Length: 135
Image 1 (cartoon, rainbow, N blue to C red):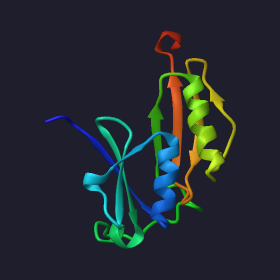
Image 2 (image 1 turned 180 degrees about the horizontal axis):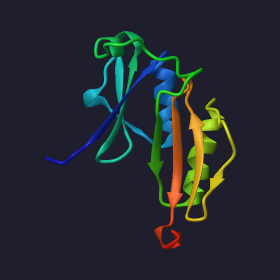
Image 3 (image 1 turned 90 degrees about the vertical axis):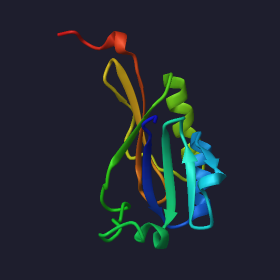
Image 4 (image 1 turned 120 degrees about the horizontal axis):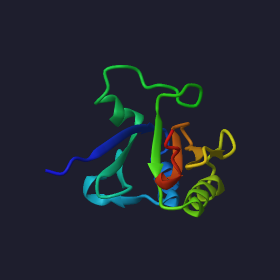
């Protein structure tokens, strides 16, 4: 069996969140979606399950974090170019996402950060491994 990653996020407005993730480049898998959750596909192995607070609560044993005021996790997605980084973040900003700081350039990696409507933090990055310092 292929190993896969499923990231589960509680969201306040399911449709608005689905639209946000679609603009970032995710696609919806209706087979695993209903009125309380949507399966958003990044790749063959990476999925984000966005769920209403009520649905998310059925899986959780702790209160749902307020990700607008505290970081619950940093989720990073690699892409194939800096242009793709910029396009994804620009698309997210156009539909109401926020960018908490400017681009970070580490020489071998460029990274931009965008937060969704609920404050979930995504780091979109391009890395050129040929530029990683050897010493």
